[in-house]
Image: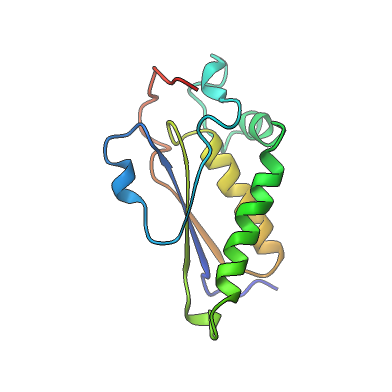
Length: 139
């Protein structure tokens, strides 16, 4: 049973957006840029998002991504458990990639699903998912 109380807040950002680094809150920060293949480089996926099933599958089947999903979720759980009364704690998790549309979104949704299976209330907010695609991405 999932508690209605939000215990983990996940935000995704694209680090190539000018204001992105100012959006990082106190809490856990994970930058996926440069670590995993970028759907942006595939013209068929460039203008889609990590909410699209094809993009999501592309991201989540990239070698190393699922261990990263588990690492992020377990880190959030560890911070949450570290407090005497975790019902009054909101753990902030920021997950970044270059454009904030593909990798960070797919990974954030997978982390949220992982946490929800443990009964942890999660809210996800994708800050740059609706922004125009940044055409020149190095990774």
